[in-house]
Image (tube, rainbow, N blue to C red; front, side, top):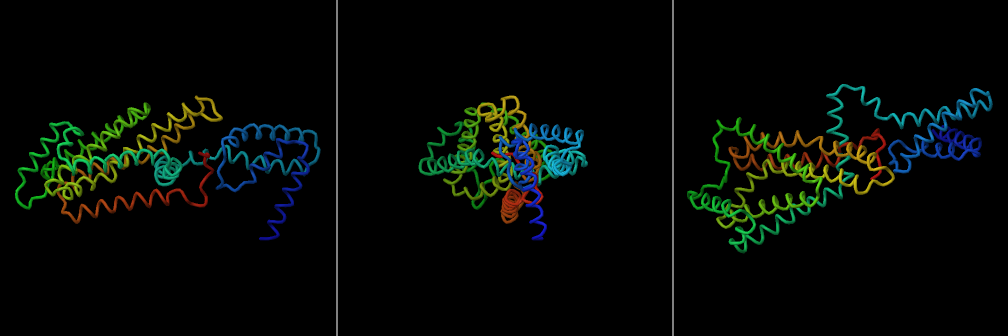
Length: 344
């Protein structure tokens, strides 16, 4: 192993000596010598195609003139590595689409989510921060609920709470029977997907997106706090979070995908705006990839589990959903053979 590393270092030194008069070849040598798991910067990505073309031209001249066969051989090896970096997605595109879709959801998407942690954190802090503020305020003063939610919605919830029998847990609007669950679950899935489309569209105008996110946060905190005045905050939370663990996080992902496109337009970096939009469209797709499975699963849970399962089952489903999300986000795409990614 040590001898192999020594030979590789000698080859690099020899190539560097022969290419010393050509700065482009030296730069190409530096780029392709990096580990495959390293991150390429915007500058690297812009340079690589130009350096690749230059190296191909230089190799063609060497082969035509028959000069310096060793340099031609070494240059050919560097070009092959550069070609692999430029065409890194071509081999993946030849795989069957179900495998590519699975790879996108299980490996590529969590890597993209980790890369966009700043935008995600911004949305999550706003969502859960406002929800906690609304909960605390309404727990202290029930009348504030009428300012944070439509009065009709508050009156309906209070009326439902006031008509509960002794010892009966509060179920809110989750009072449909098991026979209605298939139709209700289908309606919920369609509704969730429609809300997802609205979140994505609103994120293209960030103030509108943050307004929608804040409105939903206030609704969540206020609704739970009103139930708390009747000692039912835990009961309704156990229902809401059974499916909400997946549903709410999916909607935040949708909004983040829209913000990524806005960032490409506002801050294109080294790219033109058109090129940046194309490039960031791929990142947005990577963020959106798990949204449909998450919303469909959340709809099934909301239709069949949240209203009908006992408390222990609801808590188990919520906990399992949260654990699955954390493991998927933390471990997905961390294989040693992960392809090069674009630097944030």
